[in-house]
Length: 554
Image (cartoon, rainbow, N blue to C red):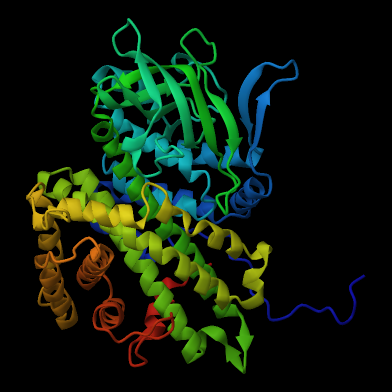
C-alpha cells in the first residue's frame, strides 16, 4: 500500500501517444515545400504512419530495451568453430525491421526518395539512434557500387529492398541485405591514405585477398562491407561479403566490439582480414574517389541524425515545461524559461530546415545542386553536428533532476549527441574539406579553382534572401570578406565554416520560416544580440510564438 505522504503531483506526463512527424511543424513544412504537388498526400500519409509508430509506447520501449541489452559478440560456437556472430536483443531487430520496411534504406529508386527518406530518418531516429548506423551505411553504399555497373545490378535491388531479413545467408538467397563500412585503421584514423591493409590480386579479374586490421568497422553483422585496402595500384575500394557464394563464411574475424560512450545498441567493431576474399569496386588506386559518394551520403545522415536528436530533446523540454509548475505558474509561461526554450527551438528548426534542403538537392540532381551539395554538406556536417551537444545538454537541464535520470531518456540523447560530429570525419576534417571545395590550398596560399562551381552555387543559394533582412545582408558581406582573405586560411577554417553555416541557415529561415523565427535567428546568430549560453535572446522578440511552434501537440 502506498504511503500517505507519497502522493505524486506536479509531474509531467510521458511524451507518448503522438505522431512525431505531424507534431513537428518545421519538418512537415519542409517536406511540403520540397515535394512535387502530386506526391504530397502520399508522402504525408506515409510519414504520419511512421510518426505515429515512433510516438507509441511500444516503439519507445524497443529503443529502451535495445540500449539496456546491448549487442554481444560470440566469436566461437559450442564446438570451437569460429562464427564471429553478434547477438542483438529482439527489440533491435524490431527497430531495424520497421525502418527497412518503411523505406529508410530506399532513397535511390523512388520519386523524391532522398527527401522522404531523410524525413523518415529524422522521425525514426527520435525513437532510437543506434540502429541508424546500418540504415545509413546500406543506403550510402548504392552510389559507391555504381562505380561497377555489374556489382550495382547485383546488389542495388537488395540494398534498396524494403524487406528485412536478419538471418545470415548468401546474398543470392536474400531479398534484402544490409551493408557496413571499414575505412579507419588504428595508425591512420581519418588519414585513410595511410591504410596498410593489403590487397593481393587473384587470377580472376577483380578478385583479391585482403590482409589487415580495421580499427572501426561499422555494423559487423551486415551481409557485406565496403572497405579500403592497398592494391598494387594504390588505395582501392573493395566489397567484402560475409558469406561466399557457396555459403561458406568469408574470413571476417571480429576481434571485439567497442565499448562506447553512447550508441550502445549499435555494434561497432574491430575486424581482422586474413586471406579475406574481396571484389574490387572501381579502379585500382581510386579508392577514395570511389567511396567518397558513400561518405557524402553518410555525412548528410549525420546532419539529419543530429537534427533528430535536437528535435527530440527540444520536444521533451517544451513538453515538460508545459506541464510543470513552479513559483506560482507553469514553467513555459515564465519569461526566462521561455527564452531558453525559444533559443533551443531556433537551433532545432534551423538544423531541420537545412537538412531537408540538402536532401531535396540530392533529388534534384542538377549540376547546380550537385555543386551546392559539394560545399553545403561538409558545412552542415561541421556545424549542425557540433550544435547537438549543447542543445541536448541544455534541454536536459530544462527537466532538472528528472532529466538527469535514465528513465527520462534524456541521458541517452546526451550520450548520443557527440557521435555524429566524430563519424565520417570530425570537425577539422569537414572544415578542411570545405577549403578544398573553395579551391584554397593552405600550402600555396592561393585558390586553385579546382571546384569553381561550388562556391558560386553556395553564394547563389544564400543570395536568394538578400534584401529581406539587414542583419543577414551584413553577415553575407562579412562572409565575402572572409572568403576573399587567404591569409592564415587553414587556421581560420572553423571560423569561416561556422559563418557559412549560419548565413546559410539564416537565408533558409528568412525565406521559409515564420517571421518570428527568422527574426529571432537573425538577431541572435547573425546580428550579435546573443549571449554565450542558451536563453540569452533579446527579450523584445516574440518568443512565445517560437516556443509554441516547437511544442509537440499530444
